[in-house]
Length: 78
Image 1 (tube, rainbow, N blue to C red):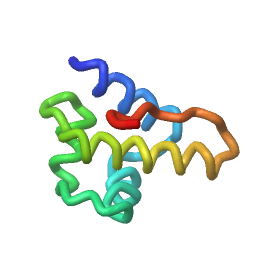
Image 2: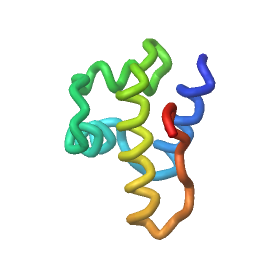
Image 3: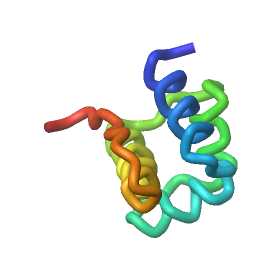
Image 4: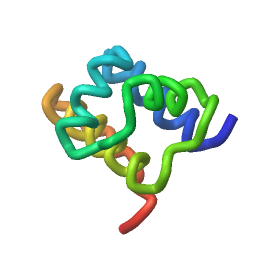
């Protein structure tokens, strides 16, 4: 398991999002991976590209913000 997988999956669970809900948010931000690919990323079966990682992190950060929580996920790029 990669550190990225652990952090993203832990954040998804902490946000209370299903992988389907996360995919909808990710796709809404411009993500192009299928829901099956996102499930593979979140399970650690495959590694997202930097762009996909950042879009997943953005979707999670937006959810935490909507919940009034401060949990900024790290991006691969500044």
